[in-house]
Length: 138
Ligand code: CMP
Image (cartoon, rainbow, N blue to C red; front, side, top):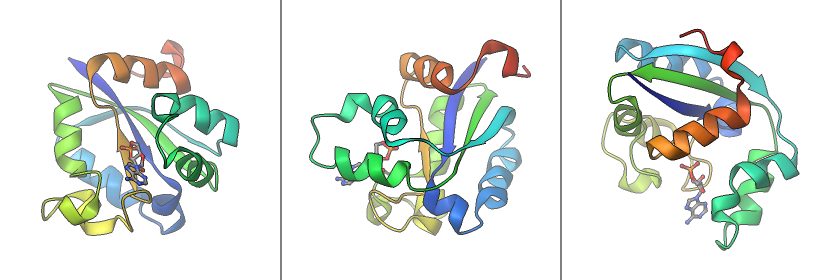
Protein backbone atom coordinates (compact mmCIF):
# COMPACT_ATOMS: atom_id res chain seq x y z
CA UNK A 1 0.00 0.00 0.00
CA UNK A 2 1.37 3.39 -1.05
CA UNK A 3 0.71 6.97 0.07
CA UNK A 4 1.04 10.29 -1.73
CA UNK A 5 0.46 13.96 -0.95
CA UNK A 6 -2.16 15.84 -2.94
CA UNK A 7 -2.68 19.60 -2.82
CA UNK A 8 -5.63 21.52 -4.21
CA UNK A 9 -3.87 24.80 -5.01
CA UNK A 10 -5.21 28.33 -4.42
CA UNK A 11 -6.80 28.55 -7.90
CA UNK A 12 -8.73 25.32 -7.24
CA UNK A 13 -9.96 26.33 -3.79
CA UNK A 14 -10.89 29.83 -4.97
CA UNK A 15 -12.94 28.49 -7.90
CA UNK A 16 -14.88 26.00 -5.77
CA UNK A 17 -13.20 22.85 -7.13
CA UNK A 18 -12.55 21.03 -3.83
CA UNK A 19 -15.56 18.72 -4.25
CA UNK A 20 -14.80 18.05 -7.91
CA UNK A 21 -11.21 16.99 -7.19
CA UNK A 22 -12.16 14.90 -4.16
CA UNK A 23 -14.88 13.16 -6.18
CA UNK A 24 -12.37 12.21 -8.88
CA UNK A 25 -10.13 10.55 -6.28
CA UNK A 26 -13.02 8.72 -4.62
CA UNK A 27 -14.50 7.55 -7.94
CA UNK A 28 -11.07 6.16 -8.85
CA UNK A 29 -11.08 4.09 -5.66
CA UNK A 30 -8.35 6.14 -4.01
CA UNK A 31 -8.80 6.57 -0.26
CA UNK A 32 -8.36 9.97 1.40
CA UNK A 33 -6.79 9.19 4.78
CA UNK A 34 -6.01 12.76 5.93
CA UNK A 35 -7.20 16.20 4.86
CA UNK A 36 -6.91 19.84 6.01
CA UNK A 37 -7.03 23.41 4.80
CA UNK A 38 -3.98 25.65 5.23
CA UNK A 39 -2.94 29.12 4.14
CA UNK A 40 0.83 28.90 3.68
CA UNK A 41 3.16 31.77 4.43
CA UNK A 42 5.64 32.66 1.68
CA UNK A 43 8.41 31.07 3.78
CA UNK A 44 6.42 27.82 4.15
CA UNK A 45 5.79 27.72 0.39
CA UNK A 46 9.52 28.27 -0.21
CA UNK A 47 10.35 25.41 2.16
CA UNK A 48 7.83 23.06 0.53
CA UNK A 49 9.13 23.81 -2.99
CA UNK A 50 12.82 24.10 -1.96
CA UNK A 51 13.78 21.57 -4.65
CA UNK A 52 12.79 24.19 -7.26
CA UNK A 53 14.67 27.12 -5.66
CA UNK A 54 17.04 27.61 -8.61
CA UNK A 55 14.20 27.64 -11.15
CA UNK A 56 13.21 30.95 -12.76
CA UNK A 57 9.58 30.42 -11.66
CA UNK A 58 10.40 29.84 -7.95
CA UNK A 59 9.47 33.31 -6.68
CA UNK A 60 6.26 33.46 -8.69
CA UNK A 61 5.31 29.89 -7.71
CA UNK A 62 5.83 30.47 -3.98
CA UNK A 63 4.02 33.84 -4.08
CA UNK A 64 1.08 32.12 -5.80
CA UNK A 65 1.10 29.12 -3.41
CA UNK A 66 0.91 31.51 -0.44
CA UNK A 67 -1.77 33.71 -2.03
CA UNK A 68 -4.78 31.86 -0.60
CA UNK A 69 -5.93 28.70 1.17
CA UNK A 70 -4.98 25.26 -0.10
CA UNK A 71 -6.37 21.82 0.74
CA UNK A 72 -3.77 19.17 1.55
CA UNK A 73 -4.62 15.47 1.52
CA UNK A 74 -2.89 12.16 2.05
CA UNK A 75 -4.09 9.62 -0.52
CA UNK A 76 -3.63 5.90 0.00
CA UNK A 77 -3.92 2.94 -2.35
CA UNK A 78 -2.06 0.54 -4.61
CA UNK A 79 0.31 2.45 -6.90
CA UNK A 80 -1.37 5.69 -5.79
CA UNK A 81 1.56 7.98 -6.69
CA UNK A 82 1.32 7.04 -10.36
CA UNK A 83 -2.48 6.83 -10.36
CA UNK A 84 -2.77 10.32 -8.88
CA UNK A 85 -0.37 11.63 -11.51
CA UNK A 86 -2.53 10.10 -14.22
CA UNK A 87 -5.67 11.71 -12.77
CA UNK A 88 -3.89 15.10 -12.58
CA UNK A 89 -2.43 15.05 -16.10
CA UNK A 90 0.68 16.89 -17.30
CA UNK A 91 2.01 19.90 -15.35
CA UNK A 92 1.19 22.21 -18.26
CA UNK A 93 -2.55 21.96 -19.02
CA UNK A 94 -1.73 22.53 -22.71
CA UNK A 95 0.00 19.11 -22.65
CA UNK A 96 -2.50 17.33 -20.37
CA UNK A 97 -4.63 14.47 -21.67
CA UNK A 98 -8.40 14.93 -22.05
CA UNK A 99 -10.37 14.08 -18.93
CA UNK A 100 -7.53 14.88 -16.52
CA UNK A 101 -7.94 17.42 -13.71
CA UNK A 102 -5.43 19.83 -15.19
CA UNK A 103 -6.87 19.59 -18.72
CA UNK A 104 -10.34 20.28 -17.36
CA UNK A 105 -9.54 22.99 -14.80
CA UNK A 106 -5.94 24.32 -14.78
CA UNK A 107 -5.50 27.97 -15.76
CA UNK A 108 -1.84 27.74 -16.86
CA UNK A 109 1.43 25.91 -16.08
CA UNK A 110 1.70 27.63 -12.67
CA UNK A 111 -1.96 27.85 -11.60
CA UNK A 112 -2.46 24.19 -12.42
CA UNK A 113 -5.06 23.39 -9.72
CA UNK A 114 -3.39 20.37 -8.10
CA UNK A 115 -0.03 19.09 -6.92
CA UNK A 116 0.91 15.45 -6.42
CA UNK A 117 4.13 13.84 -5.17
CA UNK A 118 6.29 12.44 -7.96
CA UNK A 119 8.05 9.51 -6.23
CA UNK A 120 7.98 7.48 -2.98
CA UNK A 121 10.80 9.49 -1.31
CA UNK A 122 9.20 12.84 -2.14
CA UNK A 123 5.78 11.54 -1.05
CA UNK A 124 7.20 10.63 2.34
CA UNK A 125 8.86 14.06 2.75
CA UNK A 126 5.83 16.00 1.49
CA UNK A 127 3.38 14.11 3.74
CA UNK A 128 5.63 14.76 6.76
CA UNK A 129 5.73 18.48 5.85
CA UNK A 130 1.97 18.77 6.53
CA UNK A 131 0.91 15.80 8.66
CA UNK A 132 2.01 13.90 11.75
CA UNK A 133 1.43 10.13 11.70
CA UNK A 134 -1.34 10.64 14.30
CA UNK A 135 -3.34 12.74 11.82
CA UNK A 136 -3.43 9.97 9.21
CA UNK A 137 -6.43 7.63 9.44
CA UNK A 138 -5.00 4.63 7.69
P1 CMP B 1 3.77 21.15 -9.23
O1 CMP B 1 3.40 19.80 -9.74
O2 CMP B 1 3.18 21.59 -7.93
O3 CMP B 1 5.35 21.26 -9.13
C1 CMP B 1 6.05 22.46 -9.25
C2 CMP B 1 5.19 23.58 -9.72
O4 CMP B 1 5.87 24.64 -10.32
C3 CMP B 1 4.24 23.10 -10.80
O5 CMP B 1 3.29 22.21 -10.32
C4 CMP B 1 3.72 24.41 -11.31
O6 CMP B 1 2.73 24.98 -10.45
C5 CMP B 1 4.98 25.24 -11.24
N1 CMP B 1 5.66 25.25 -12.52
C6 CMP B 1 6.23 24.24 -13.18
N2 CMP B 1 6.77 24.63 -14.34
C7 CMP B 1 6.53 25.92 -14.41
C8 CMP B 1 6.84 26.89 -15.37
N3 CMP B 1 7.50 26.59 -16.48
N4 CMP B 1 6.42 28.14 -15.13
C9 CMP B 1 5.76 28.44 -13.99
N5 CMP B 1 5.45 27.54 -13.03
C10 CMP B 1 5.82 26.29 -13.25
